[in-house]
Image (cartoon, rainbow, N blue to C red; front, side, top):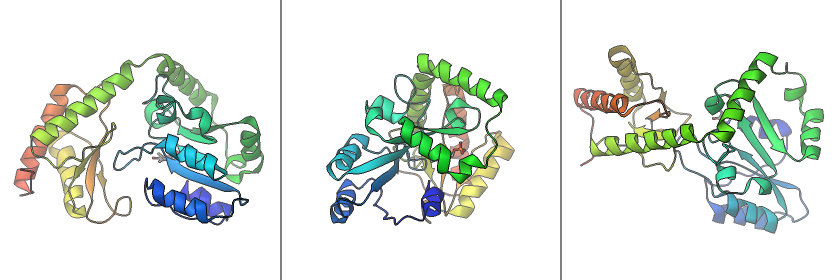
Length: 260
Ligand SMILES: *Cc1c(COP(=O)(O)O)cnc(C)c1O
């Protein structure tokens, strides 16, 4: 999304993360006649927090702006039909453009935007990144269609994932591990040191057979390095118990601090 904004060559202003007061200040200061687009994500991938999409759409209406919401970390996983947070919150019709991936929850590859036909046509006709790229193969599309159709009518996976994430957050907190209390399926475990984050990830894989990537700068600010867990519906409580046991052993071995 950031690369797209840069490529557009448009003037841009960065509003502080999820800060609607700041967003309104910027909108208020702008010329009402200037075309404006508010770009944001629904579920933020590193802290697992969520944008107040209704409030953003209210501001867009008030200040004559259109909206662009990246739902990549939410499609398939939220909403009664897996449409994302906009589906869950009943605001999909108010967002001008919704971006989703066919990777991540849908488990295949590719991506899409959803918008009114005229906007889709404009992007189809003018976006070089789209025009000069090979289209998705029929094999991928068949896989995606099966995933999308399934997740439109099945919430078993969504409920399973939410239950797994809630369980993992609870047992990490009970074990005194510095888990960040997100409101989504994203479970960040704070380390606060890039070398240690990488080392913990290496030990987990080599000694415990658990794969989790360290998240370091520049993906997150320095000092907030972390491991980011995203449990799925197939992760059993036994697996998560083992994981927390392993983390406790590693925490002790590396003489890391635990919560009281
Ligand atoms: C993964 C990701 C994308 C890109 O999705 P791909 O399908 O891998 O191209 C876009 N936005 C966010 C926030 C992501 O995390």
